Image (tube, rainbow, N blue to C red):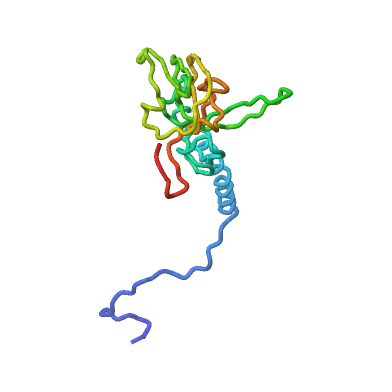
Length: 218
């Protein structure tokens, strides 16, 4: 019997596949790989910029004006979604009384020079309020409290330190809020420059991420 001729009783052969040489990519495959890499490099920064512009942003505290609530060099997360939604719907973003917000402030120096920077303060007065600072105390008058109330004593936002100096009697107009730092002896706030425009508000503080032992929601 010829050894190359299988016997009827032999099992059928099983083919495991032929051996092939190394796979080679054509020019089209290489171009797709390059374009994919470029797309990632372009899209990733765009997504990051969109998030920091419209959703949330990280900030570092610079200065003592919000002590003891916030300390110098605390790292914070500021939420921008409410401000973004207000702009989309054509409304003013008015935070709640007691919220801590970041806003743009244009400071006028001597010789008419102007410097823009961002400050972080607590919202004390809302549109329609009359805010009075006298004898070291802030009193807010509105339709719900015609006799006035003292937010530093009635709102649960922690301790205010220092003397609330100033002699202020101002009406907070529509599209404005009145803000103060928690460290009243060392804070540039609405006692100096008046109520701020809602359009200047960047966002609301929601989380302190550093130092880790003081991580907290707001």
